[in-house]
Image (tube, rainbow, N blue to C red; front, side, top):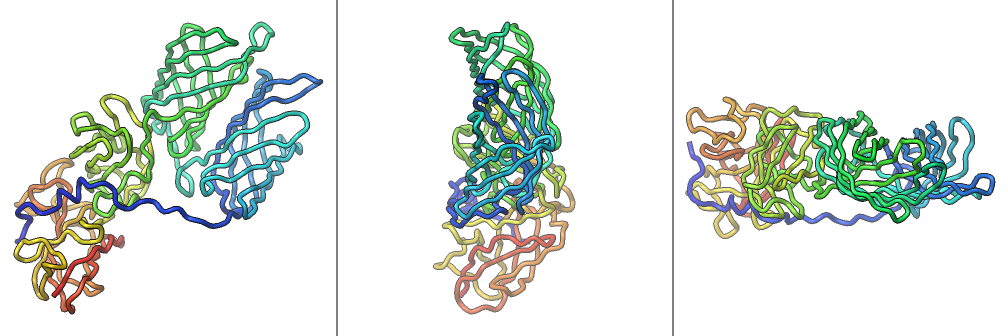
Length: 477
């Protein structure tokens, strides 16, 4: 049995910066650009009997991608709270501008114009009506396409918030703003510290109370402090990258949003070998990229589905850790991290049964050792008939099983449990071993017999449980 020896460049593969940068795409908008569940927050003033009233509305809209839309909302008009059901149609022009005709509680309402932004991730909204000026923004429920299932655990970590509007005290309206931070523990308990400004008079408060998030990502919160209790409607949007709030107490027309103190977007959580954000599997080594991350593994904590994940490396812009072997597959699971006690937002990831990724160096070269244990390269190619060793992560379950965070044993060897195959240059390669590398955590290796090929560079690809890996290059002579 040939196994990993010497100091190959695997460490470089595990700790480098992300090389593949996102590309900016072009194109025009259509009705399908606006599709899925969106939450919006509107604010402004409406007129009634020549009197202006502060207005705040938090609502949900479901766009079918074909021009039909429905939803519901809560609105405060001068501190009077009402609930509404919404239905109607919309049209998106190629310029990404659009219009919407809505009925509210089955009664025709004014038209709404909007501008789709960020490829359909959100929209800027404005009501066109002679009785007031109301505008705001809509945010997709999830940062990706489709829909997700939220829960109270979807709101976890520390958020900075800003609320603005008006408060009506003893029949008199006052300008109102509040800024501060709130922390959800993922189990329904929230603490908040902020400073409120009521027409120039300020007061600082610290409070706590319960919150809950429903499966559609809407929720409620109730915060009690020395000044009383404030109740809110809220919505978790963009996979926890923002939260919208509207105060649900009579006498208040107050709304705003909250942003995580530091954010982990789903696209920044990737297979450490392939850098594919959709290639995560039990036992895999994965990387988190971003700014303001923990400077060392000692200050970093990563939680997958509430379970602590072993952390191997952290340098302020990257964390390497292992997906626990016992996380559920083929459904969303939560991920959050903590930097010296400050929690990030919670995001949802899809964990597959298998999601193999082959480690690379210099961009497109496979981390492969030749039969003599030297690193394969254009200047040091393999020969036909040699046995080479490729290194990867993400093939999933092994037999016998190995505990999360534990180094793989050498006796017995832990082999990949799911069906698999390997090709080099599209030709089937004979596999003498495919499993965990003894002495390492989350690192897999495949011992492959090189098929008959002419001299040149060829992609090496594995398919595990029907899922294909990336295809970095190996050199032949």
